[in-house]
Length: 573
Image 1 (tube, rainbow, N blue to C red):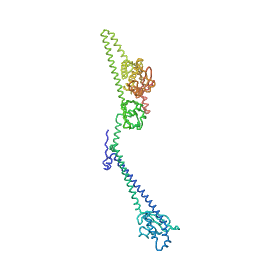
Image 2 (image 1 turned 30 degrees about the vertical axis):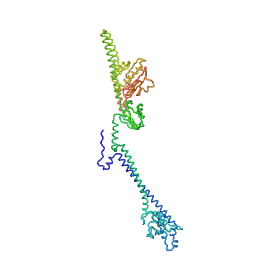
Image 3 (image 1 turned 180 degrees about the vertical axis):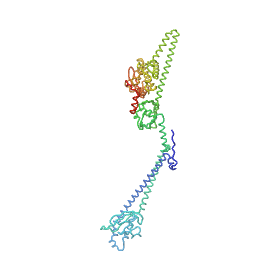
């Protein structure tokens, strides 16, 4: 698999190219710094606007309270009342009000307190030179008894001010009082909070930068300094590698849920659909295989059977309880080849035994001839030949399938060597060409070879009670191929019928319990069944359909197939 290396377009600006070429941790650090700076700046601006608004509201309340207090003060009312002005000859209101206004201005912290007549002529002002001049601002509504609030630019500059009326005993407006705070004074009051807010913002920015750097450093360690494009390519390579290996690979988390299952594992286990997140128990696997996958201990080269395959299982824990790595290898063909090799080895042993027996018989014949007893020599030799030829003729006449005939002859010789009489029933008959088309010679050896081997072992086990015999039936039964093997052994108990075809079931010490499990798997793969019965011993019957069921097609295709496929009689069970 070849991959095109990642290259940046040359037209990108240098800074963008430098950012894209950085590691993922560096890019995230830069983004986090920008976000933190934006959030801190936005918070600082909002804080300043809120503080400025609150300062203006506070200033407006302060000048309103001050103006009302001055308007209600007896000193002011007496000074501006016409009767009081006439009582003090030669003394105007300014002489009384100016010192009072300056004292109130100092005590309350406002920028100015101006008292004026109803025509807007000032009696007081922070600048004495401006006394007697018209007031700059709006006061018309105050003449009607209302309070005027505004921000206006007067002699002292822009200011927040109010104008309130001064009422006499008859509630008539006899004068006006204006108090205000300049905008410059309000801004000066905001400098200290603004500096504190700026310090807090800088501290938050520095703290965010340090936290982002620490997170980026940890991320850089975990990503090995790789950028986003490199991580993306690495993930693609990882997925391609896992799904291209021929061995099945399954990754499980600490709760034994599927994290990854490659294509080979799906094929070996017969799994389909979405598997991520499913527990092992929900995959529909054989019980022994599911238990092995859920086992916390490490598993090494353990043979298991699925519906159609023999798999070699290995598991390895990942880290400290992080999960499990499961590898599966297909041993179906290897197991079949092993069975064939065992059969060949048995044939070779049987041939060796027969050669040894033939040598002994030949010595006996030669000795008889040397003794001049030729008639007895001829009778001895022909009797042995007739016995061997009788079995050969019976098998060849009944079974036209060469693999099956050779297997029966070899197993008969092997059984005879072990003292077991293997016979073929009279109704056995398999003509050439009637074998199921999907049944391979390897599957045939697996089926009949394992059945005969188990039957021979069982017959020998009960040899002390009865003569060990194994009977084989091979014939066509309706639309099925019937293979039946009976022995004179102890048989299979009713409680073991449901377990006899499971992996690991065996009555032999040191046995692996694979023979009958392979028989059941092979029969199931070829669309057949295996039955367990009992006569004088165990009776195992394999039934295989001579014609596998065709897959569903559209009506026209099914009609065509039915015309071309001859109808067979239903199976006799």
